[in-house]
Image (tube, rainbow, N blue to C red; front, side):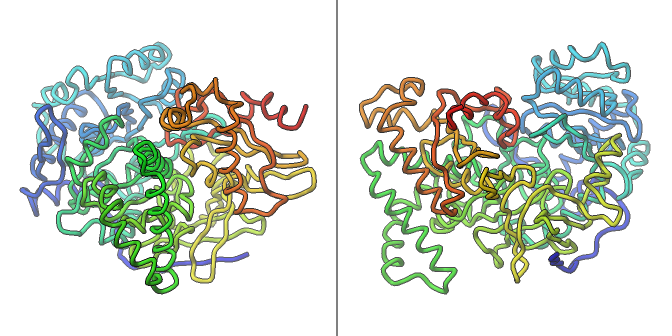
Length: 596
């Protein structure tokens, strides 16, 4: 058993709660711009004083509506300024926020509202309200449903006009670090979502150490970030709270179709994303270059960026690599950085392994991707690579005050102030995940090197054991396979089988350009058996197999005609593969790989 601990470097507050940041910002720097919100005429700045006034007005409306201290209020919306406004208003009222993914089905919404005992819901659109209405008949405790489409912010503001400032201040200051701040329901790669109880203290610990360690991101002159990941996910949520705490200008982008335009207008200094976003940016750039007849130039530029980054790890890139890198910086890398607004120097990646190749590529073009690791149950990050302490291919060292332990079976266990209080109304699940001594069982398998850097090698329950007794971690192969421009998603199979196989789906955005260049039909269903397409995927498989031994390598694969999506139920809202769903729905295709 191996352990590594990083000592605590800050003093974590023993009193107060997350609303204190909003109050202190308004008192200490009332004119500082803490948000820029999207309006019909462009980006509009919001100062600390304005944000406090808006949050207070909405919170008074919640109080007037009968929301009591400790009540749960659900929030169903895309990522937008009002999400953050309502989140803090719920806390000001002394209540608990229950975020719900805006893509959730009526059945999923019903389960979360019923299990959490929510007293109120703020929903974004008429469609969201309709989904809530389907469940409402069976929810006696649900007293209010407000809609952003029907001006919920203004409605609540008018409702609370008679609530005195003193009444709100008493509510706002009630919560302590031990009190519940939010119930975040796991997106559920398996089973029914469970409500993770995160306290104000969990957030205060996490943000205290993370903002201090990532000081360069939050304290750079003009520091700003644009959120486009779902705020129902803890990853985006922690950046939201960190931006408020550090007075970093925060913007929201709710439509992925407008993301590139929003990035270029907003010009963030850092962003956060899941690995699939970084894969898509790379693949889109590669496909566009190929379509424009510059594919070989892009490929050479990418290899040079990777070689330059790898050279940094060895001390210094060679003279030849430095020369090529200087040329491509002018021809290629600058255009890629401009696509992110031109001012972005850092990105934070989490949710799944990024992969060494992409990590080196982005650092090579001038955008350092700081990969970290954490779960909903740990208030986001447990470990992180830092600007001055990065080891590409790892998820960094434990944050200060955090200890990692590698159990005898390879599972990673963590202990620290960011570890959750348990699962809501589910003592059995809590006891299974959380030991009395505070050790949280992540379910992930990994290793820790002599310097404390953590490497994730797979999921404990997803380890495949072939008929020959070989243990195979599918994540290693899947991450490398998805790096190919034409691969959208894939699943590696072979548990109890004589060899490893894979099911592959094709990226619908990349396929048309490839098909046109090869004189093919642009429809996936017409090309699943096409020799040229199979040759492309075969090359991707061979590249992925370089990461493993022969016994672990993919021997056969099948190209599927359909994509796996969140709407289809195969992906979680954070774009993780629901292995159990895919294996159930495509069991015939898996069986066909093995001739049965």
